[in-house]
Length: 291
Image (tube, rainbow, N blue to C red; front, side, top):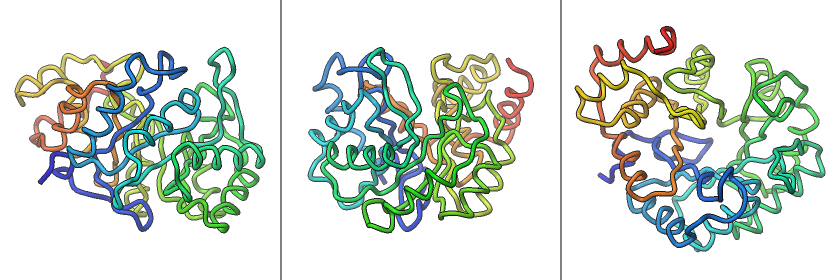
């Protein structure tokens, strides 16, 4: 069994993916803008991910912009039959690297076709609508217009499945009344547990939950309890944090990103780490204690 497959699989609609995936955001330049410092290393990371058994890559054409999708195409096209590529639409980048809302129907349609063109695909496996009612985090807003636009692209055959990113429970409920939702991509990790109830609810409904910032994002997880458990397990703290997520719920899919092959190998190895009930209990308390 390849390392990524040791955590098992889950389904995105009719697509089966390894629960340990790869997020391509870090393949762009600093602040997810412009080209990477080392394009050949970025290509090597993508190829290594597939060699390690990963068959789920998360990307977006607003990474760079366009940069990560162009690198994915250079590294992996023609794509393996079992490779699932998930993208996001709903935002764009300003010339100053700012993140801006782009959720109008015409903007969403253009973004989907940009992803297809830069990746060299005729149909996207999954398109997540990144909600940008507030750039800094989830905020309520009506989804009927943008989701109707994506549903029309699904009807035309250029989008296979639809998901949400940065969504509230109310928005997820509204979305599911409009289209089938196969995944939700929200911030979630050991220390950021706002979506605990949502993870459990989606698991019961067979919908994938894909944490972004699984390792803390721009402020990496730091916890004395995490360090103690990691030392007892013979793993790094970040491997332990990923293992906790995989054991938290069977519908959690991980997409940790990196521009380093060595770091990628460490991340994927976390799929084989099994935490004891005592270790899980100690880690469960981190979000409440804030340590």
